[in-house]
Length: 281
Image (cartoon, rainbow, N blue to C red):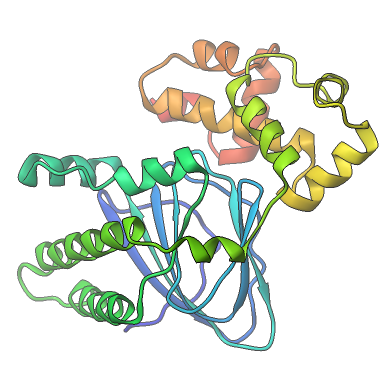
């Protein structure tokens, strides 16, 4: 496979999908991020714990992680081994086109994993070999100047998605032993995500969940990797961005995501996404 230099940008520049195979001898530092598209992360080598929405996944080569447009995540990469992975970004339109052609919804593994808040797939060795073969084929045709290369890459990618979906529903329960989480923090995360327009102050949450403010702050930072304030702000901005992409007005997005000050909303949005809300229309 063609190997790329690591690019910290989380912006998709192609219309339907992007395929990136990256390799690093020295582990890069990746900050917490999210993006307005689906992501398949295919781990090939390294020493990595991957944090997604408060759960930390201890990865083995061949593992796959699924994230959607509302998930805050980052890899914690330790030195000692080369870090290699394939990352595939998929726009909503890509899945819409597949549904029109084949009548199948290949986003179900993403939506189901989000509902269960469990994003890890661990295919068996035969499926890992097949998925790697498909990645080689996608990489080869992606860099080919021949006619129909994009169409061929799309076909191989569709096959890749089918195998990922099958592996998701065949995943053994034993892989859950490689997940670190905290049930109290999970309950707080659920409450936050269901009440983003409401008061989510530290005082309110500590009272509601019968936990001291100091302990809540410490546990939240330990399991989420962000402070309580940082997480709530990112989540509100993500929901606002997704509302804008769906056609909502800037003012509606501001008010319905818990922001009481319009100018502060604009500044926070620009700081988080690098563009103003009106640029998403």
